Image (tube, rainbow, N blue to C red; front, side, top):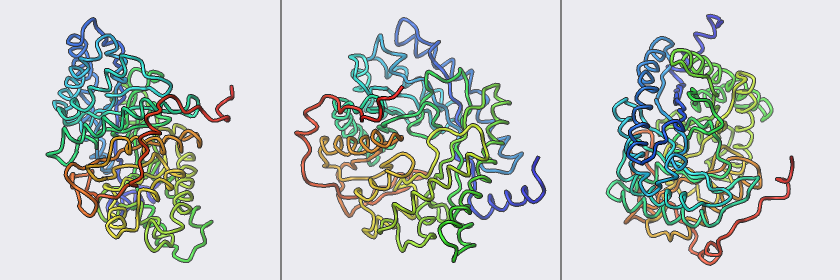
Length: 451
């Protein structure tokens, strides 16, 4: 039960501090939809999603109205499509189009799972599937794709990394009229998780139940406001304040998750604790870091501040829910965070500094615009660097970069909505082409050898 003070506190967080539930994501297993042809599989997939997700949008909208908490996105994640189309991988796009059509008809914001898991090796059918990704993303609006190229147990599949650099470039070119928008829907992971509710990386793992509700909370504005109240506190007290605030945010997410699962006849999966920013002022992870005492995010001390923030968010959230999962921490997407955007515009935030920050926070290099003429091998090298951080540190890392066709450093690209806008950041000119061309597998670290 919630006390009157807790209810009033939550109302204040919603009205003044940008608290929202960022997403309610319905995870669906599609393994039962596999048929003898791509066309029949696509038809079965479409019918299954339409039936299982039919009530998602009205249910979430009703919950938002009843509890007075904004729920920004209604999403669906599905079984990695490469597994559904292994017998006819060249025709995987038919399934992707069917998923996109179902999402549009149901009013679902994004649908994730046009995905492949190739961390230890790329089977022939998986490579054929991956080569369908650029055209499929260019031909759909709501479909999202992700590829897992490494893990702490298996190492990094450099052959897949090389291919993904090429496919990111192709995806950008196929959507050049929209500033390379297709790349906003494509994530390359190391240590991908099966219960992530956030896009573009969500997919429904084969170890999950048939139908599961996962919820992603938000709340950078709430944390920022809490820290403003203690401007002279030392960092120990600041961490305690963040923990208590994360507890409150997660409690709201748990309430929505349990109720949504009950009404949809699904299992309650997890609450993802991630602080997910938006381009709106007052809803920025960067501004939280600056409230801790940094003049501008990106200066020396940023990585330490982010490590403290991320750890405190996790500790507070764990006390509020016994079902914490997904990515859980603090996102640092450049185009989706007004503080990150402004720091990058001032030249205070670089790809190198962002990479260092990813060693201590959730996920990785996210929504970063780079010059359109960046070589595919350089993009592959960026992916390899980020995957190495994830592999060695036994954490999830990812890359979502956008090589913006026809634009260079000093220019800007705008995607609108929650995807925001991004100044184009420089990348290093030195070539890693020979390194990436070696291919093979970067072996897993010694600490992976445990059982």
